[in-house]
Length: 254
Image 1 (spheres, rainbow, N blue to C red):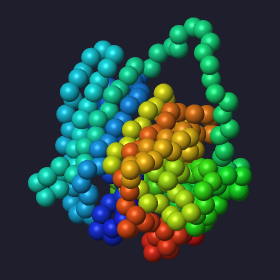
Image 2: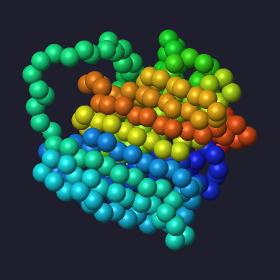
Image 3: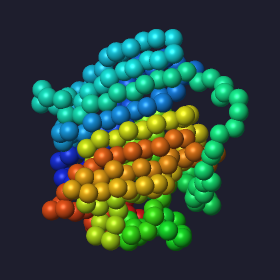
């Protein structure tokens, strides 16, 4: 599940985002803070080779902590990320406009110990684990229960959200011919961390021209919305990804 659909010797953006979140989390101010904004720049392939992570705190205040992190391979930075931690406080008084939200979720919990492949939903169709189900132009959602990111360590709520954020391209850019955009960056905004092992993404918007795409998804769990995930992508039509074929090659389609 960590390998990229674009090349068999590279890691997918999901695992890269999760690893960077793991490194940034080593500088967390504690339970009273929320990783409110997490941004990743995916400017070079991260290879299926040994990885070195580095990080530093660039701002440490009573209300804001900012941390930067990088993935280094072959003596060069392959991807970088930053997180802004904000303190959890009470909301201000008053009422503000809220959109009406329909947040689809599978009826039965996807609570398989150790994680499992995701489920997908296109338009009004039922949830399915069929990786070929999304070859259409309908609005999509995905539902995840992830395995541990790092051997011997339980996955944390922040790592879970960071991993799933990269899948925004899946729900926003999966069309009749597969997925033809590769992520160049990911930005996740959170008002709280996810609760429980399950996490959903629902496509909100997709704007594309000149071979560049911006996709926006809503991230949520069974208790409600958490925040948004935004990706910028670049057309990669010569290597369009057929997810059904990719899943079969990795032996997790079932």
